[in-house]
Image 1 (tube, rainbow, N blue to C red):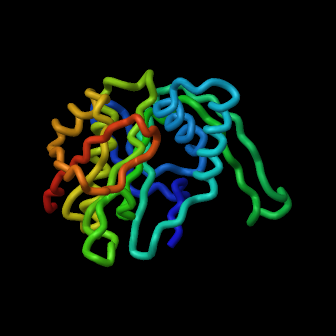
Image 2 (tube, rainbow, N blue to C red):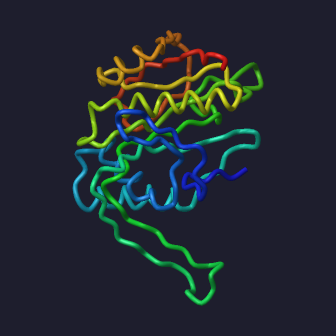
Image 3 (cartoon, helix red, strand yellow):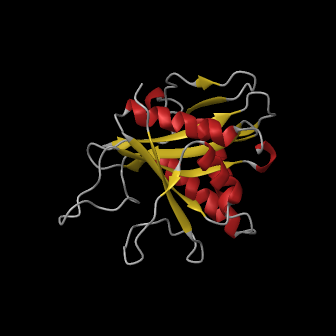
Length: 227
């Protein structure tokens, strides 16, 4: 099946009282901000032109959508701060005479405060059995990023909480993630939310993110309470 990161329809966004922040599925007009937030958080040291190339690559991937295996689900969540100043450059695509092929993409900045991806694809979970079957019933959180000016406001916590709600709605019994062991703030966040470190056997070849070969990851899991 095909799962688009930019959803055309907003389904039951979560509003967090006292903050004004809304957590919802990413939409088409969010794509540039999602790409910018991702790259500025995970590759802060990159300079022009490489930083622009990274953002364009991520932007195109979001616009194109991404495939998931049959029976799997993936959502790209964004935390939106409606009070933030927003400036946008709109790009119109397609034949303006044909409404069916008319699209409008926005390169906006200022409203998306944080992002997160949650799925049941299980790419970074150990396979099951001799046949190396994909594990089911476990949601995986990745790409948690908050813009520098929006940090220390509990936004990452809101995103994780919404991801857990998605996992519960998908029928998952637990949630897993990898955390950079040098990111102490992130480790504290996940532990405060009930995530436990899972000891990985030294000789085990469990899959893990490969952003940088020098980065060591902590594998963490949490049981999802039944609603």
